Image (cartoon, rainbow, N blue to C red; front, side, top):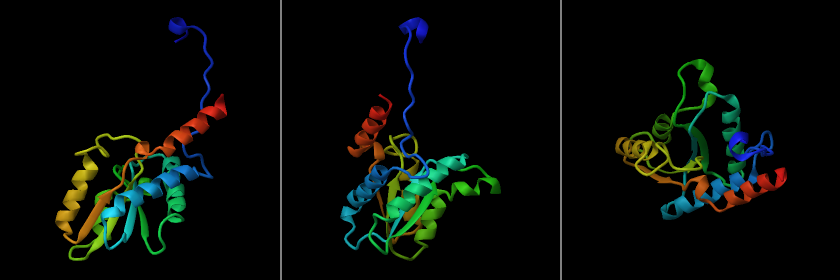
Length: 176
């Protein structure tokens, strides 16, 4: 880069959700996205599952867990909140990562029972998991086939919410 563009100053901004405090605006985004996704559920929301990619790194799971605690404070009392991942490595040493989404969905609405559930998407942008026609959509259709009483709504992505720009602006201003 120096050879092509000349000398420059590199500064690295704080992460989106620093630990241990977390980022309240991210929890606000998740809560707002859950509300937006649940507008068509006449009977109200029974459960919310906060879902992310999953990681073999405990600190990544800690971010999801911290945001889940913050989201819990923003949800209607009585709404159950769970966490799930799209991918995880096999073995007990990775149990901290959490349960796979498909297993979590089946546990939330066993065959024959009814449940209104919102997936709170902890993804910034679409991809093979979170994009249209992605893994999450496929898993949801399959779960509803196995559990006909399960009504599912998928929240918008974090990157689609205007408050994300406020977080990014704050991180940029902190390093300038």
